[in-house]
Structures are given as structure tokens and as C-alpha cells.
Length: 425
Ligand code: AMP
Ligand code: GLY
Image (cartoon, rainbow, N blue to C red; front, side, top):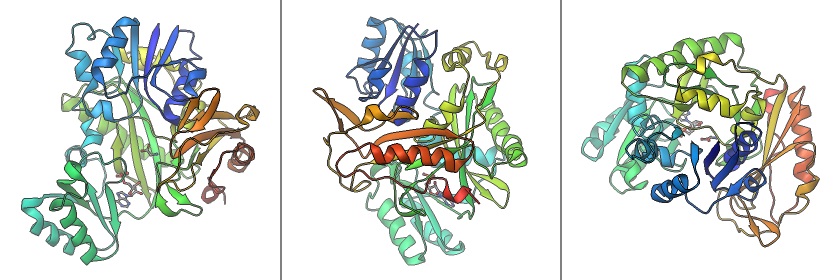
């Protein structure tokens, strides 16, 4: 069958690598893809949010399955677009519909959902410009630090964690009255701060059945020892040693099961991935957020650990037979180290030539922000490459990735050398 994958980052390069290994995949297309995805299929110059162009391509190229990498097309309703179109309605799209995607698209929606179905999460309240005074009062009732979240999608920038009450009030005002995050911030969720250690769990569901995928921990800050600005993610580790069987059982019983059942009770026909961002607070799991897609760079360690044919799993979502599959997981640890452009997550320059990529022979090299400029591969984003290695221990896997991180060259290259260090005792 012909498959179309939407997106252009390290996550999509990993999906492309995995999908291309399936005997069920005849031709793979990636829209728009990057310099790495073209090793596994054909890149096509269509943006993932341009539904009409996606439709034209799907019909013309006899596509049977569309896999959606990022959240934007899902939150914008690409699944509904397919279901409501006579030419597309029988083509499988992996990813939830618009209402299901609200789990990520609206913090208020996801908090209400969690509250309704008893999923443990931080206490919260929601405010708009007309209720700003109640917002100030709510802040006064909380202990610092204060957590303010723009309700809508804000490209990962919509969460503020503030120590000072006066500044928290000022930020609330600038979100609600001064459009700090545009439309996304006209509704603000304020929540209790959870003090713990973060990790992510991933679930694939056909709406009734589900498979729990390997968990991962990502490293969001730019600087070593988790310092400096937040990024999209500087590296990831899977499995996560502190997520033992007891903890994972709690996540299953208190979070995954009520989430799947809650979606069904709401009449939401959810197919695709659920990414559960968790805080482990003294051994108890709390949900920080849901995402309706895989994480990046978590995908770069989670997907390589899955031994199953991913296309087969995706196909079973359509006929709701995911229960007939058992997840097979590689025991060894995977560590990915992200190479980024100098200056990221602030301003950075693109178009830098990348050298020695073909010397990465014993680890997995996933492209993120790269493009082809004639015969050269050049940087095209903040996060440029993810290098994933396996090892019996975190340090073995990490050191292997670091050797290649050192070897690959481009002007301004930066990476963290301490991915996973906090997990090694
Ligand atoms: P989110 O976009 O919801 O994932 O939030 C971004 C980051 O802010 C999370 O990865 C956490 O590190 C942090 N965060 C969000 N909510 C809370 C909370 N209630 N308590 C502590 N940290 C939080
Ligand atoms: N790595 C976090 C995310 O994909 O949202």
C-alpha cells in the first residue's frame, strides 16, 4: 500500500525509517519531510496543514493510509476533513478527530476531561478577560511557584512558571488583556505547581483497545543540568529507570484506563497516539498534559525500541483489532542526543553545510531541521539532527551518541553532553 506521512521533524524521520521497513508499505511519501526522510521515501512539497493539497495528492497517488506526525493538522480537523469528503472517507488517517485533538488543543478541555474522569492532575481554575479579578484571587490562594497556561496551542511556549505573585498577576493581565499569546491565550488555565520528576508515557489506541508503548524522559532545557531556556527537546532516554512496574501499573489504572474509557463515554472516536506528560510526585503519577501525537525527541527513542511492524499496528486501528497484537519491546536502553543550531532556542542562522553524516554507521541518525541545497545537506531549523544509540546501560548508549555528535560537523553546532546523567546513580 502507499502511505503518506505528514510532518518534517526528527519524529517524522523516525516514523519514515520505521514505516519503510514494513513489507506492507509499497511507496512512502513524506509531506514536506526533510533531507533525511528522502532516504526512506519521496518528499513532496506540501504543508501538513494544507488540506486541499493533501487531498489532491492522496487521490492522485493512490494513498491508502495517512499518518499525521504533528498536532496542528489534527487540531485543525484533518481527520474530520477526510471523514466528510466522499473521495477521502475510506482512506485511513492515523490520528484523532478535531474533538479528540482538543485534549492537546485546549488546556481547559483537557483539565475538565481529567476532572470528570478522575484522572489525577494538578488542581486548577480557568479564567478569561471578564473573570480576571477572580484570577488574581485564585493566584493569591495558591502557594508559589504559579503555573499559568495559555489555553490554546502556543508552539510549546504557552506555559509560564513564576515565583513571584506580583509578576504572576502581571503575566495573567498580559495574557488576558494584552494578547501576549494571541488567540491561544484569551483563556488561561492557572494550576497548582507539582513538585516531582517528569516522564512521558505513550499509548496507541483504536478507540477501544490500546497498546502501551515504551516510556521516555526528555530534556527540555538548552543547558546542561537542566538550565537555561526551554527548547523543543535536547535529547531523550527510554526506558526510564524510575518508572518501575508499580509506578507503571498506577499510570495504567489511574490514568490510561480512565482516559480511554472517558474518551469512549464522551462519544469521542479516538484513533492514534496519546502522549501523556506525567509528573512523578513521590511515586504517584499526575498528568501534566495530554498530547495527541508522539513526542519529539521521544519518538527517536520510543519507536526504535518497538520491534513490531508499525504499519500492521496502524492497520489494526482501522478494523479495531489492536487487541490482537502484543507490543514487542527491545530491552536495551535507547538514548538520543539532539544536535542544534548555535543560538537556538533564540535566533539562529540556517543554511550551514553539514559534514560527515555518512560516517554515522553504528547509530541511528534522524534528521530534524535539514534540507538539501543542490548536493549538500544544510541546516534548516533549530533542532538539526537526532542521533540515537542503544546500550545495555544509559551511559553506554549516551556515549555512543556523543561520539557521533562530536564527529558530525556544522557551523555553530551545539548539543548537551549530559542526557540521562540524572538517571545514572
Ligand atoms: P506543558 O506545555 O503543559 O507540557 O508544560 C510545559 C512544562 O511546564 C512541563 O513540561 C512541565 O515541566 C512544566 N509544568 C506544566 N505544568 C506544571 C505543573 N502543574 N507543575 C509543575 N510543572 C509544570
Ligand atoms: N518533547 C515534547 C513534545 O514533543 O511535546
